[in-house]
Image (cartoon, rainbow, N blue to C red; front, top):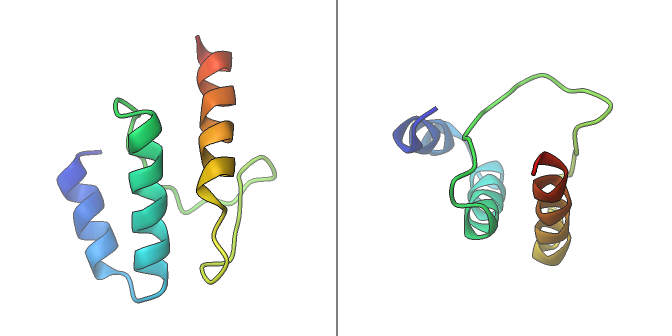
Length: 73
């Protein structure tokens, strides 16, 4: 998925969902700039879910990404 496609997807969302996901995206790309961009509507037991009015703190997101990158490497 291209950056432009993600931009289009985010642009179509209503607030506060748009801002929450845009912040999450910036955090992820700050830690893993080469991360594959994917948007998935499927909910699974292993995926993380958070309310848009109480997103994960950036420090937790960074730690989760670091752990996942270590697993992949």
